[in-house]
Image (tube, rainbow, N blue to C red; front, side):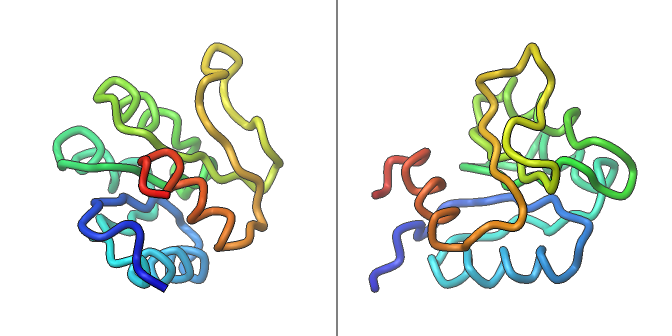
Amino acid sequence: MTPRLTGKRIMIVDDEPMIALLLETALADEDCEIVGPFPSVAAAHAAATTEPLDFALLDVNVADGKVYPIAEALDARGIRFLLLSGYGDGDCPDNRSHWQTAAKPFAIDPLIERICTALGTT
């Protein structure tokens, strides 16, 4: 299959090494450039505010708390992202209903589809 995310810069924020590795591998198979993975809000902050990014995958609960400050920074920059949560879809602040969420555990193929759809590469 032809990679659909060639050249796209995608940031990963997840403090679970196996999930971060799974995401890295799946995105590498799609030929994108991976930024991270970062295990915490503090570690991801500089990339979220300064790196050129096309998309981000954000685990809601990371080592130092909720990832919402990273989501806010990306949202302010117009960078699309997907919040991944073990607590089900919709785990985001009430005033941010436009933020996209996905429940953990997730299947890789539908997750990649969602990224491609968001970036218009389907």
